[in-house]
Image (cartoon, rainbow, N blue to C red):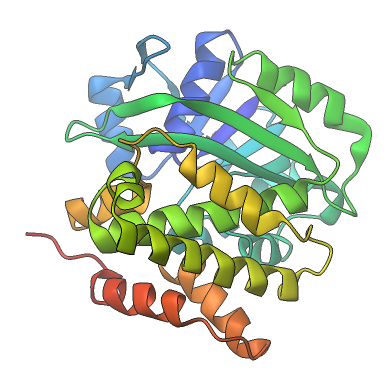
Amino acid sequence: MNVCVIGAGAVGGYFGARLAEHGVPVTFLVRPGRLQQLQTRGLRVLSPYGDVVLSPQLAVHPESVQEPGLVLLAVKNYHLEGVLPSLSVLASRGAWVLPLLNGIRHLDVLRSVVPAPQLLGGTCHIEATLNEHGDVVHSNTLQHVIFGPLPKTDRSRLPEIETTLQKGGFPVKRSETVEIDMWTKYICLATLSGLTSAVRRPIGDILADPPAAALLQQFVEEISTIARAAHPSLPADIGAKALRWVRSLPPAMTSSMHRDLEKGLPLELESLQGVLLELAQQHRLPAPALHTVYALLHPYAHGRRP
């Protein structure tokens, strides 16, 4: 199955490079600036699992992608609108779409251009960023992908998609409850990104400081309550599971939002914490910790370059 990766940043670059490294036909659909960078330097991944240097197959127009079977969509939420025309073209040519975006609301946007039978649910767990050269820096051992069918997904190609992803050498889980997996990841990520960015420290420093750790616990309790109000089928212990996950992370781990804040780049604040605030208001739920973290980060939402 031919794979098209939209978004050759840290996440798309990593998983796309691993697939290409193991012989899967991968085309990276990129913007002109990234095209020039990858043509000049190649796609480089620096990882505990081994470094990769590739001369990737690149395209700037979706019509140039040969027989697309699966699209890995790995852009930031604030770039999603810009890639919808390309997604529409690829989907019209028969591609299934697996989004690896943060949050949950992007599914509603994707349904406007991707036929329901071809749209998958998905999420990933990885800490990666781009360095000053545009290389992908994978910081720890997290590198797994979860995908699965949504209620209207055509299931006929799921085995082929799973086999294709497994060739990349990273853990792949096919889930029959992928929306619950996405919500669980959303709660975990909203907490990790919000607190590490607001405090400007990795998760270990936050958990070691009693007031900061108490704020983190309050944050998880608030947003898990909001999530269950918005999606009542979520398990009652989803907040406890998210808290255990956050506490189990390597102490040096931080979030891509924290990295973007340090670089002066735009933040995915609205699609993560902002959406949760909207849901809290909709369901008339108090969220003082969420409001505080959102307010602290809002001045940096659009990026501030030095």
